[in-house]
Image (cartoon, rainbow, N blue to C red; front, side):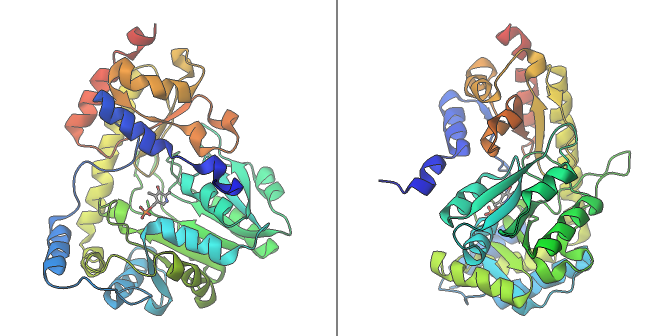
Length: 389
Ligand SMILES: *Cc1c(COP(=O)(O)O)cnc(C)c1O
């Protein structure tokens, strides 16, 4: 019965792996959700809103206090001048992405994106009847080849979908890379849709580390960029599904036209609570990054000791490994066995790829878990070599 364009998008690996982890009692480092809640003040505010009567349809653009808080946040952290009237609150970043693709792409229009990619991207492009033009990000740095990037553009390119910091690879695009993308978008008259949900999860290393550069902060790019983020990742409330998008009024209007008939509105009691949380002091945001950096190091060291090749993660809460040194030829088959082998779950990078060869032996682990959980996972993984021998 299912329409042809959705047939290759019927299940998500995250649900399947989480179900497998549950069944086997494995530690779930597959799906990327934290195992602790966000700031207490945020939880208390939302609870008070629910019992205090903030439960009916909010305005179509979103609650005014949240749109103002998003604008202030963009100024405070990224130096961006955003008019709250040009901020649209969505049902998570997922709906902002879907609204952008559905509102901007005619059937047959092309969307340039980077693979491996977040799984909703290709499903949404399929829903819109648009065509994806993937550009490979390859290890060890998960950068792109500028010639391959140029070759992905055509007169049919309508949107370039960028995600930095990047899920699943942990790469953080440099200003130079983003400039290359932006120049091609301008040359071909394309809109950039920039998914920045991991904007606060960037790690400072001995080398000085990476820095999050919003696409809209580059010269000339604000006028052709839709910037997307969400409360889910920043405040460890992935189940709340409150996101936002801002950009030039005509682009936001296109997203809104699609969005209002997807969900109309959502999250009435959560929106004002998130508005307040966005104003949390710098220590909250820097604490988030430094805590995750410690977790990244804990898990990365353990994976390396267990025999994986571990690629550096500069941002997000994911680390990508290669299982080839363990004598394993296929990451997907490996992930199906891993819970039974050692009691840990992970996801194969091939499911984030149009070209399965690209991520054949790559496996993604999430480190947004309590330290004791990561320590236990590392000790279980230490037995892997013996288990696969
Ligand atoms: C988690 C995630 C999203 C989805 O965000 P929601 O606010 O939960 O819809 C979007 N993009 C990327 C890259 C993600 O990892």
